[in-house]
Amino acid sequence: MSRPVLVLWDLDLTLLDPAGFGTRMITPALAGFLGRDPVMGASFAGRTDRAILTDLLERNGMERPDDEVVTRLMDAVAERCEAFGRDLLDAGGGALPGAHDAVAALASDERLHQGIVTGNMRRTALLKLGLCGFDGLPDPALGAFGDHHVDRAHLVRDAVVTARARGLDVSASHAVVVGDHVHDVRGALDAGARCVAVATGRVSAGRLHAAGAHAVLPDLTDSDALLAAIRTAAH
Figure 1 (cartoon, helix red, strand yellow):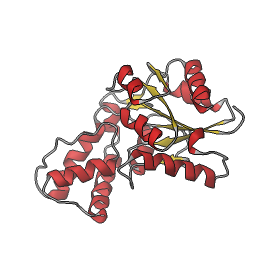
Figure 2 (cartoon, one colour):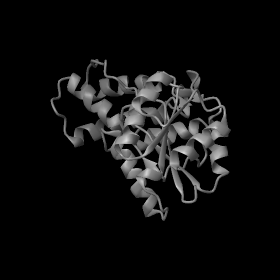
Figure 3 (cartoon, one colour):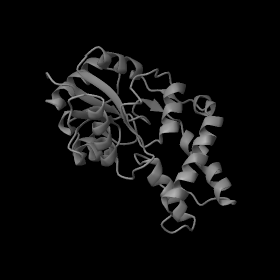
Figure 4 (cartoon, helix red, strand yellow):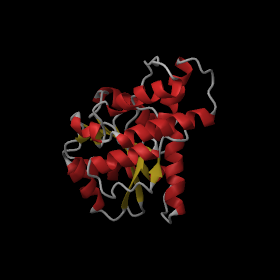
């Protein structure tokens, strides 16, 4: 492996446990936005915030809400998250076992450049990273967030464009997504990238393999295994 490799971390249930923070923030924010108790029930796992909030607006009677409406709701959710951020930690959330050591181990290889591909909108992603003790790595300026796209493959493509704009000689085939959900795997593959999956979420190792992950690890506690999987996937 001689050329740079872009490692793109998912956040929720990959690097950190949000302990249901999103649901607890979205429900009252949506109630305030609608002026009544909302109908919930949308799937959150592995999806972008734009997809989730668009789905919820449709469930609550807004057919095909436009971008401006969805953006206003995202802002309302972000404001509530920022106001009640400690709730994530108070509920038992935080960095997953081995996550900090894994990021540090990857940082020891100068060919690996760590960014983010998450369904979280930028404001909530930065909040969670700060609360969970990730200070500067993975690099929030190197990646893409769930503000603007429904499809995670678009996020991977955007992250590669961002990396190239910063002078990294990378293509999608030299990007490796690390995530816990089949949506992470499919987003990577659809963008032409690789995926190393971790069975730290609600998806079994078998399902992650079946979705096409290039490697599946039980968790992030074995940094050497993670490094080897990323190096192999990136070839």
